[in-house]
Image (cartoon, rainbow, N blue to C red; front, side, top):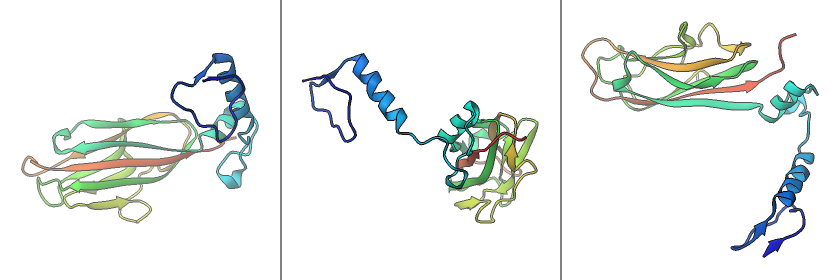
Length: 182
């Protein structure tokens, strides 16, 4: 069936429905008009109407994540790019398979090339579990919190003792975008 009017909230499609580009564009315009901007600061937005801060109102929270495995020793695992004007509020490491080189010698840190523990100081990953700054089981790095510069964030695994034969951990960095520093 040909759809010949802008889509309304709650519309469902059936097999064979067609929609021309003009109507799709009109439907998207209507949807954008319903997005409240600016989002109030109390709701996690910037409270600002500038173009840059308006975009932050729509993307107030985010995450960067990736897996570190025992074969990644000495290599930075890229978790993603932290945008400029971001506030890192938690770093989480979930060890799903313990790293087995030597107890206390398997470590994961989170940061960037110039400062590998900028967000999270090296954490012992020789036991399974969920570790986070919020839980008090990961020590925050020196560049924790507000970051004015966009950066590639990486997780770094190192070991001492015997070469590991097992180990896997999910590393997650949680952040929110904030107003540009005055």
